[in-house]
Image 1: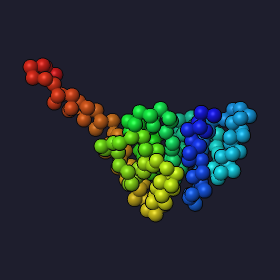
Image 2: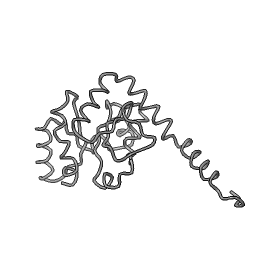
Image 3: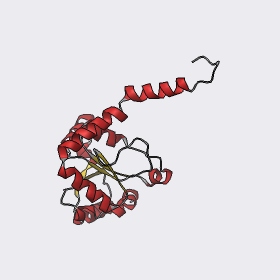
Image 4: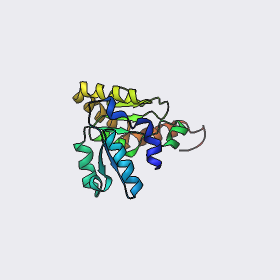
Length: 174
């Protein structure tokens, strides 16, 4: 139920876009089955998470065969407003797949509108899907470039070390 509560605001998204949308969910209880039926009636395709993430290889394959990611954030991420990005989103970007992710706060470096689209309303999410579909290859290239420029471990560590070493007070050996 927790997932559905955080997601309900966007449950109608399939009715706002011709883009087929799929959710991979872990469903175990009868209540989960009812929620699944409700989401399917709203236009979502539902896959069991075990099908798509049974192994690292199957998970990677699922991401790489996807058109891209649509993702809502947990309520805690929305509360902190810290521009949080999930590891799953990074996997999509690294695979050259555009992402449509809930806006989790202001960011000085996260783009919006090329490879990554950040949304706050269902209408914004639908508009992002339309923009991606209008020039899918460009957004795929931008997604990969974003992964390489903003999230590459070597570059991130280099930036952290550079800032740390440049901010060392005078007289202190680094």
